[in-house]
Each structure stands twice: as structure tokens, then as C-alpha cells.
Length: 526
Image 1 (spheres, rainbow, N blue to C red):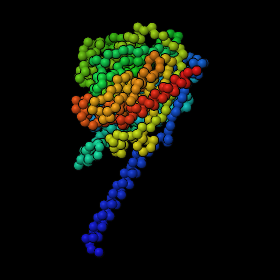
Image 2: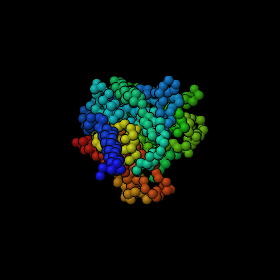
Image 3: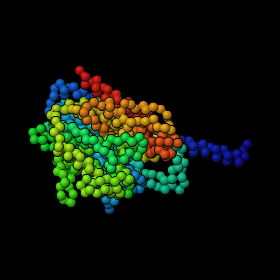
Image 4: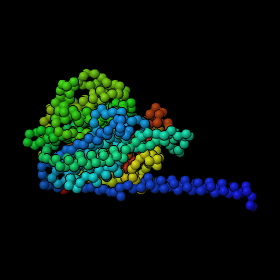
């Protein structure tokens, strides 16, 4: 039994199992590290009732803050990896600056902060970091951090960095073959800068509070020639919503919150210059007016204006197949370009400026604030997201293994209501039109009914997308369609599911926001 062959065989078997044990230990340790809780058991449950302000009304106040978050680009600076389309896509210049724009709303009893970042997305961990960086002296009862989901901004999620070509393709069950090893495109220094800038903008907004009147506007917009729905059913979030703040004594504009739903990716995939896209054009139009070749076409309002994106799932985009007409040049722009971006932004800016100029809408000096916000857990069913986390691309914590910590919120500001959704929600979940997709994976009737806006009270109903997190696409379960035959999509697999946490996410979020709206309504009743 002391044969050399037997000894070699035993050593080989021992080595093989030792290798397996080492690999299993490594993977277990890696998973434990990746899926750890990075925010120390953070949990939030905010319940601010508007009843107090209704019973004891005080003058409404608003403040604004703005910080530049444009990174340096070019020789002597680290590469800035642009987000949203492909890897290895470094910025070569800056077309226009990126900002963190904030507002503080105060009804004399409660104070809410909102900051919106010109970025692809911001994970919940980073939102928590912003909140912790805001000094207690700002006295916020609740802070909302949104991203515009801009595809011409630095990677702040980790998916769009450089890649290493692997010598051999590695099969990953349920995902496919890994031929290149991607690396995160997030610069830790830039992330820290954005967190600090967001906190500073919020602090400045709280420090600049002054009495204001609030006027609400909702403008019906025909999506044709502006935004395309690239997935059935055809449902949009194309209407503009505006919360305008003015000085009580003279009507001078202090600023606004503007909501619209569309992917900011107008310059498309070949663009290598950082830009705020149409979001920045709208802000500039409202503040400075619309100017072509040094000539004013429409005067601006002054103040500081916050653009918040709405429903962008489905996928709402100013696709290269869409020709956008510039309303001032009388020229169509179809090929992706900054000129097309200007045409899109100024088309929307024109509608907003004309509405404000022509409107006699009442402005309220009192606008009671109500807030319901709650931490939630979402099961991570997406194997690609799991792999991205294991590879170090997604640097976000988890409440526990296999679960994301995220957040939903519902607010009322006077006669406006706001639903805060932590990702890219499909418009049919908000405005109605969820269908039972033929050939869908679950063959069920729609679960997420009634639509969210139907549940919301108030005259103007805002939807803040990518609010306090970016979890990806939020797809109705009855429309989930990973498996063939993809009848609704001409035999082609739809895109949204690839970047969704899972098929149950939409129903969980719909249920959570429904509960918050119900609780807010119960609290508002005497």
C-alpha cells in the first residue's frame, strides 16, 4: 500500500480538495465583505404630519444652494470615465458644467431638503453619507438626494470603468461568458467631492431661507418629437410639472422645482464631453432666459431652479431616431449633438417660461408640509448585479446577504404631492397602462394597481425618480419577459430586466408607496 503511485494520487486528491477549500473560503470571505452593511444598521422612519401647520399656519419659506461638481478633465488629471453607455469611455473635455442644486422648504413646523445631482445615479449608502455630512444646524427633518441619470457625467456607480481583456473567456452560469474583466470607473476622490458638495448645497439652502409664495403648474406636453418609448406599452411621463417660488412682496422669482421624465442621453454614445444635457439647458433657460447668437428670445426668471427627473423606465429617451425641432431656429436636429440637446431643453424651457408669463395661478403664502419616509429591503434576484458586486463594481452595502437597503418616501407641500422612487420606474406603474404581456414569464394580471398617481392626493403630483438610491429599472411583474419567445417585442429580449433588481421589485415598491400615502392620508384627517 506504500506505492509511489498511490502516494501521488493521494497527494493530488488532497491538493484538489485543498484548492477547493481555499477557493470556497475566498468566495465566502469575499461575499461576506461585499454584502456587508456599510451604514451601521441605518434605518429611517420619518412621519411628519401637515396637521400641525394646518392648525397653526406660518409663512412658508424657501432657500436655494448650488455647487459645481465638474471634475477636471485633460492632461495632468486622472481619467474621468463617462457613465451610461460603454466601458473605456474617458471624457476628453467639458461642454458645460455639472452641478449639485438644492432647495430647502420650510412651513414653520417642518423642514425638507432636496438636492439633485448631475450624475448617472447615487447609491443609498452615498445618500446616507450626504445626510450625515449636513450639519445639525441646518435643522432638516428629511433630506432627499436625487440623480438626474445623466449619461454624460462621471461614473458614480462603478459599471463604466476601464477593462482588462482576459486570455480565456470564463463562463458564468446565468450571466454568460466573461471575456473582459471590468473595473469600477468610480473615483473615490470624486465621490467624496460630490458628497461634500451636496451637503454644502443643502446647508446653503437652509441658510438662505426666506419667505415665499408657492404656485403650482402642470403643462400637458405631446411627447412626439421630444421623447420616445422604446418598449411596449406606449406610456410616457411627458407632462411638465412646476413648483414656482416667488417673493411675497413683489413677485420676484426665487427659484423652482421642475419635473419631467426622460433619459438625459441626448448627445448619445459617441459624446466624450461632460454636459448637464437638457437638464442644464432647462435650468439655464429658466434662470437666464433663452439666448441665441447673443440675442434674447425669451427673458429668464432669475433665481435658482432644480430639475428632477421622473419616470424614465420603459425606456424613455430622445433616441437618435427622433428629430427634435428647435422652436427658435425652426430647424430639426436628428443626429445626436449638443445642438440637439439645446433644441430639446429650450423646447421645454419655452413651455415653462410662457406658462409662467401668461399664468394668473394663485400663489400660496402657506403650504403645509407632510412627510412619510421609510427604509425598505429588496431581495437581490439579479445574478448580474450579484456578479458586479463580487467583482467590486458595485460599491454599495446591503442590509444583509442578498438584500439591498433602499428607501421610499411620500411628501405633500400645500396642494402638491411628491412620490420618491429609488430607481428608474416604468411610466405605466405611475400613470396607468400596465398590461399582461403575451408570452411574459409569469402570465398574470397586473399586480401594481391602481397606478401611483391615482393614489396620490393634491392638484399637482410629482414623481421624483432615482430618489435616495439607484436600483435600476422597476418593471411590472406582468410585463417581465426574460424567457423566449418575447412575443410583445418582436422576438427580441427586452432590455429593462437586465438592469432590474428582480421581478418582484415593482410590486414591493408599489405596496410600500401605497402604504405611505395611506398613512399620510389617515394622519391628515381630524
